[in-house]
Length: 522
Image (spheres, rainbow, N blue to C red):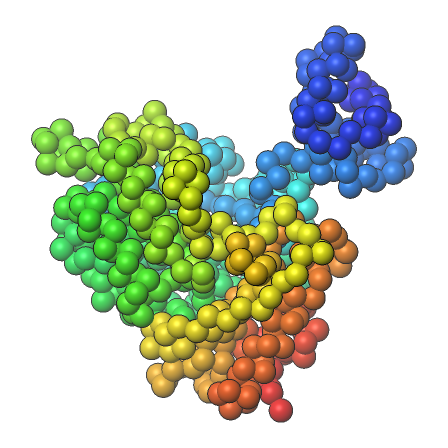
């Protein structure tokens, strides 16, 4: 460690500012000190020890230079995935693997699954370790987007659900609370605030009672295992629900403010490339769907799934890489400005996959290269996020996209550059439908379903050099309030708020009421 501290002091004197010069420097010092080339994590640890003891001054340049995988905090938050314990699944899907010791659909070798198993699937220790790892690799952890994964969340025992989420909050609060409500209250001002909380479940498990429960747990986003929009494909793959369940779930969730993410699966048994492309066109043209986010998980053929037996009998055939790339490119062309493609491949280790294009782990990069060669760009949110390209001198514009979805009007507000290929900040506003609301607090109330500013995560109450903390969110909220009051003559507006964002809303005179932040518009 003494060597690493000496190297840090030398690094500061050298005033190195880019990764290529850093690599040269590390090779030089390793040769001089006759040690293995130090990792960024080792150097960061030494740096933090020196700053803690006030032997050196903090340096943003050094912190950025030594940060591992910068992309982890370039969307304005850090993601933490926590896996539930193995538990029976109500589904019998033929494509879904089952391995002893893991929740259904998760396999050994997947990073999150391995971490969870090593920690006994304990939510507290999983959350705690991920926070520690992120901090050690140079990432701020003030704003945590917590994703609970594993099996069908809504099928787990209710007591387990409550205890699981409470323990995640306890880990972020660095304090053990008596109950979930107390843990949530503490998190409003904690160092590690949960600014988003998502679970994954089946469409047929979403009803009014489940909606109320999800809100009490603090959930703000629901990932629906949609897989296909064709009933015959769902039936053939023993999915166990129909497309009407997806339509109903989507509407219930949007009407109560949740962000809705779809998990869809090209290359299912009985599907074709043409059907998969048509499916995506339907999802974004039919107002009964139109998700806010989407995960495209091409079917992975593994021995642990019943589909493998059909493959051996010649009754199932995976697409070729060329065909899948074409499908994914066509899908990306259909994505509107208001949707984010979260992923286009699962984290299943390549050796576990028997055959097929999903053995290519960098599928997103392959598709991106194809797009570049054909000279066109994807409009999805992820492809347009400002990330590290923030330039305070660049002029930005307010854009508004109105569209009908699930029986109501959605208004997507965003700050972007003129070409709309750099997205700074967004807000999703839903104008209430004529349906009776699931929750009385939402009667005759317009809903802010999401507000997010992108770019490098800036710690809470700190001024930074990214798009965050520049007042963009405040301007979007004011614009939403103006639209609601002037255009639609609605006197109240509510925001579905994660627990860790409640104090942000309080700055704009929103008050907590039945898990929502509500404001009267006079």
